[in-house]
Length: 272
Length: 338
Image (cartoon, rainbow over all chains, first blue to last red):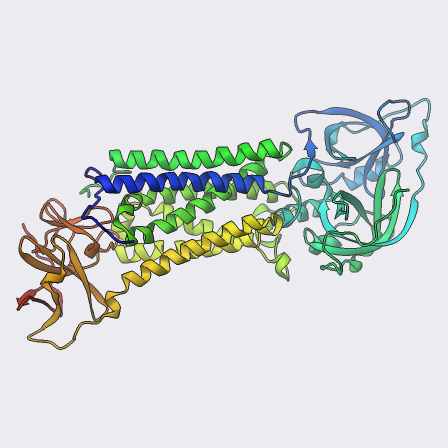
């Protein structure tokens, strides 16, 4: 670039004509760059899913409470149209980055309860952010089917590649709620008792989540924190509880790198 | 130039500059948020804002870093440099919004103090666990220091060399932010075009600095004949100096600007007392040497700013023999007019 004229800009004097022309051209180019980067930066995002959090809507729920492998509310849907499964299972969490209180869970286990909360859902995966003081046991004259525990359906040993995320953010409280930028939040959420899930991207392009539980059937938190939000391979016993997929694992079976292509499960479990 | 301190010495040009600057920022934010909401309506608001503010800040930092070398390469870009400080403050505001929202969203409301969480939550062995948040924090601290001292009050009280050195930390902030983006957002958003944008931005910033640096250091690479003739050094031919402009030479690593005007020649330090701008790239305007960066002026005969201003620059004695300019090897302290 050569200076071909003797123009000299000073902030306190009128702008020379050729400088003005160059400046106007530069501004158009700058605005073009601004628009291109804004469009590219927004349109090329690949991590935002179809997850929802009804943060302005508080709903009433009734159902049976089960604390293992993770706190959940089982709601009887038999007789209702539009529901394939006669029972809906909602994972239960508290506000902010905390899971359902363990003390309350022990007291309420197996009871029919009512509660108020906000619905969180991603596809078929559902969760309720419970208003803690709204949880109350309900006495019922007729016991419906839901109080009888549904047996696990054992699908055998599997190895899956995916990413450990906290279910609350991934199901919709934060969207996107996965991968590196969300790692710190996922660690805090799982550490605070929110159920950890393995997010697996199937070879078909569809995503699926597996609730992680320890081999003895309890929720698993601190032991998996180092492996959160990075590509991992996990081996464990896969069981179905209704429409929930639960992977019972030993934390030491988690390896940080997938032996196959990351994010693609090596053994795709069949639907029960 | 001003003899008293004002929060902002507003002028029509500065007002237009800021208007266009914030028009550009708002345009970026509106387009980014609009396209995101159209294509991904389920995105949560805080994440959308974190991404929009962060992307806008990163782009603005690239623009700020490119203005300096562009203005050195062609003087038509000097208007962009004139009010660059306001760009820096705007950058800090965007970065602060990004950082504060990220901190609240990802760290608050959990079982650990959010400040502690910020430090310990994303570290670990391996590239996938390489911490990226702490680099963002370090960059934000630098941007804060720069924004807080982005005023002539601090420039005068910290002295120009120290102020300038502190503001050169912007390059450290840029390096930290590249690490922050590469090991943060780009680990999740893996589209090649986005990686290309970050890489392309680095190439443009580094390329412009290398080219302008090479041109700026030309005089340093052409040392003068150091043989002294009664304390004078042969500098250049009078005919090689454009009228009302300067030729820059280097004496023992110090740059000297030799101006020609009204049939006279003078030699002064190349360093403006305001922000250490390159006086040799300036011009004689209304009989004064005028700095290309912010229009600070000095009388060529004395090196002192015209009253009531008080800035002074070192001057060098000049002798002309057979059309050759000779300048004294040692400078003199500027003489007061009054």
